[in-house]
Structure formats: structure tokens, C-alpha cells
Length: 424
Image 1 (cartoon, rainbow, N blue to C red):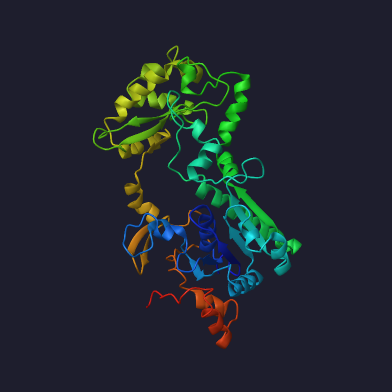
Image 2 (tube, rainbow, N blue to C red):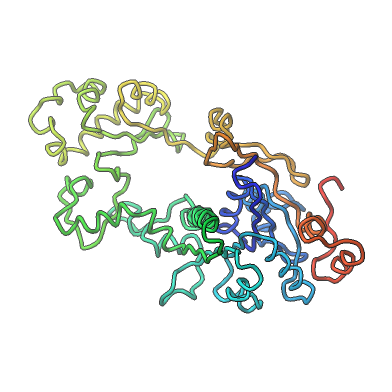
């Protein structure tokens, strides 16, 4: 039994933010019915294509464990089918432009009439306000949510991060909102609207920077490198380079092989509790009790010197050897792992975080599995559906169409042409 067995999701999402949410629910056992435009489907099916004639990795890695139905919601029969789907499903998830559902004739009021228990979950770029009608992509969300202004080095421009905190991050937030609404429905019997704005999601992930913004009123932020270097603070939380956000000085340092390997680096934190062990490790035992080095406040104006000496030591070892030496001493370090290294990591494969998936058109590919592990409901990664692969199956098994009625719908043009299955 899966955790979300019996929950049926009507998936009107596309690209990344919404599909991230619905894929997570599918991994937990929900029956996710992905509604796609006939003959076209999700735009990402044909974006960044690497295997001619096959769905892209962009699509396949965001749409595991789902069923696909082609449906023209502007067609009369299509509206009939959509109405039936709303009757049968528990949750509708969408990330359309604002007002798109209303223009289709399915306002929140209409959806409630059809199914009072329906939960309508939406992702938008911004919440209500002056920007609510603006179009938002990943990097726009990172910039508007506070991430970019606090990422990079103090003397450089704002930077976005490679982690998709705007799209996938907001999808994760929405998944939590959906499960919470389902739980409340068990007591109330009513559905409700759930919304997650990308700006809000990014800001939530940047909360420590909002913390620092308020701390500035009490004076400079002493854990930032610029404090020890005597660089004045402005009115807003600054970019902090690779400083640790938790108050313990940290830097990314070169390791053996850095000249040819762009990822031969480690993250090293000079945590106060292990300062003496660090001094012994790097051959500076005199620093343990020396004036100007013995306590964290004394070391703030010497961090460049201290990390330079530590880096002399890390450069004699690989990033993995640094970890092997430091971990038994409780010194916090972490290797900079490339996507190639992560893809080949045996530990991640053993836990199902990295998985191999077979696809009928593109063959085997590597994907990320469910990042959340349930002991009684392990997630199994099933390949993404071909466009419209389950159209007839959904019409028959979910909506009960049969015989002449099923033929009428299949031949109406509202559900696209019959799509080949994997077996075919």
C-alpha cells in the first residue's frame, strides 16, 4: 500500500514547477492524470531534445509515475470529459497564466459546483498585488525572491543558483499544501484552494538572509568575511561569497588536482568546537592558545590568513581524502561533487535517490528518485508516459465510458488520435 493510494490528481501542469509537485505526489502513490494538448503535449516534451524522435530528458525526469490523456478543453466533448474528471478526482493542480481556468469556463465556483470536495492547487509567479499578472521563470523568481541579491561575492554582480529553487522549490511547497488540504478535508469534508507563489517559495528558502537583514539594525554582521576585512556594510543583506550562513566561518578551498579538475574543491568550516584539532591538523599548534587566534572573535580579522594556511594543507589531499581525515575529528567538511560524480554515486543509487529508468523511445537514462523516504511506502520510479498513452484507459476505467459512448468520445477530436503504447 502506498501512502497516497486512492488519491486521484488531475494534473493540468506543464514545464517544471507544477510537474515537480505532481510527480512527488505520484511517487507517494497518487494516481496522477496528466492532461495534455492533443498532438502537442507538455512543451518540455520537445525542449532540449537529445534523442531525435523521443521525449526530452526535461520532460521524462519531471513526469514519472503519471498517466497521460490528450484533451482539448475548448472542445464541447472535451469540456464534458473535463467535467467528468473533476467529478472523479480529488485534486486539480495547475500552473497556467492567471485567469486561464476562468477563460476555459472552470472558475473556482464552477469547480465547487461540480465537486465540493475538490482541492484546487495553483502555482503562480507572484501572489496578489502589483506583479500578480507578470510572467515568471526560474531565474526571475530567484531574483524577485531575494536569492540573487544575496548570492555571489561582495565585489561582483548578483548571481542565480543552479538549484531550481524557483520552479522545483515552489513545487515542493505546493505538494505540502496539497497533502495538508487533503488531511483537513478528512475532517471538514470540503475542498479548498491551495496556492504557492514562486516569489514566496524562494523567499521562504532565503529566510536566513531575511534574518540577517534585521540583524543589520544592531550592527555589522560579524560572521561575514567582509567584517573581518573591514569592508563597510550597506543597508541591505550583502552577498557573502562562500561564507557559511550559520555563523561558523567557512570557505571553499582547493584540493589536490584543482589545476585540471574544476570540482577538486572542498567546503571547510572552522567550527569553534574543533579549532584545536584544526590547528594540529594543519601544523599550527601554536594557534590553539595564541593571542589573536584562541577565540572566534579574535580570529575574525585573520580569516584570510587562516584559510590560506588550511588550503595549503587541503591541496596536498584529494577532496575525498580531506573528508576521510576530517570526519573522525568532527571537523565539518564536504567535497564539491559534480553531476557526473553524483550520477555514479553508489550510496545514492542504493537509496533510490539516483535511479536508472528504461524508456521505450529513448532507452535507459538516469534520473533523480524520490528525495523523501517512507519506511512503509517506498517510492518506485516508473517511466514517464508517452503523449496520450492512457487516454482510452482513463476514459474507460476512471470515467466509465464504454461501447458506443467511448467510441463517440474517442472519435470526437476532443481527445486526440489514439496514441501508441509502449508495447506497440
